[in-house]
Image (cartoon, rainbow, N blue to C red):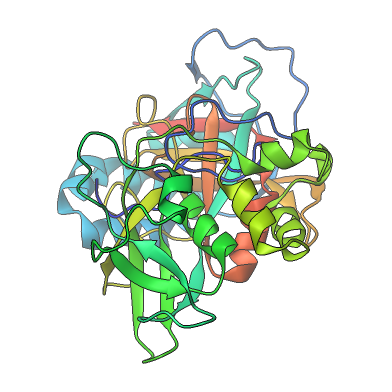
Length: 357
């Protein structure tokens, strides 16, 4: 598997995504739009896109340039389509005028067959690590083991099943931060002992089933479903002792392994550096990598509350993930703590059209 960010499937009750989750938990959802049109196909061709939303296509060219630099083959495949989209966005931007620029559109049906498509979010964490363990930085991140038969579960790994194999890549001071890096599937790290920076890419997983700790907390009555977010999990963990945190994390037997990379680009599963706000993970069986979608993206405020508004944007499908299936898009939010906060709140609906020649 190439360096990837979103390989991963849903941690929250419908929030972030982490590979190998079977069925994503049902989220608290906002942004549905009333429609009297039933879409009978996964992608339904439409004569004209009707959208009265505010428009912002500013990031498309930045993402397209990343494709041009990283993948001549993908660029050759889509060069004509990208050029037409760029011409339309610069000269018009009116979705009703797509056909005048040689473009067609097919609407994604959404799980409700009314065009309401689920948007979740993911991001690239930045973690402080050290090369050697000490009394504070004592929680290892592991390279992929050569398992004979089946790999150990999370609980077994926490109990030392991988000790003595030389698989430790680095050490953190937080079990939950390690877990969240697994949830994201990859991320940037900073070694405070020597100042080195690396990108920890997804290397594989142990093959055990994924269990959402967000759902566990909801079912135990520790966090209300409507309050569930990445920050809510972190807040709960901060109030617990280590044994309690271990017990919670061990409810999820799945475990993710990493490989260290000195190249600091954020790479999706298509092998292309990702532009925050312009790249999405999507179902590969519906969207070939490099596809361009026109989307009414739900807008949230600083507290993660839906503002009641959408913005029409051009997004490029450059990543995929185990829980990103069907009418579900996972929007890449970028790098760092604020991006993580924003991504953790994201579980809302918007309408989506695939653009074609």
